Image (cartoon, rainbow, N blue to C red; front, side, top):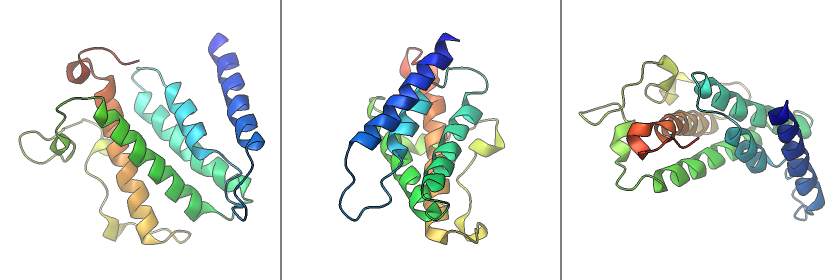
Length: 167
């Protein structure tokens, strides 16, 4: 109960914070604070067995809520904004792991990360992904960013990679 009250208060603070800050003139797509939502939501995901699906839900809900805030007319903007946040947060996670070798994420070679979950494997082949509502470049950027971010979140939580439990 304590956690859900804290979540509601944080969510309201994010909503009020974005409502209180004026939108840039002509920027009608700034109504939903996707970065604030993703930061808050991913911050509430505990280090548990279902953390990866919980992380994934944070991202999909952020895109969905962003699009809803634009009356279902901004999916491309929302997916692209989520991808930008995932890339930036991934860079933040990497910066907290001194000496981290990004080739670990490739899954190729001796340093490759081999995770038991199919969703955590290599980034999807963008030539085989299509969405009637999104250009292939946005789909690829979003898919690749999400795949890398999820791997980094697993590593961030790993005691072996950071030397301490991070959450």
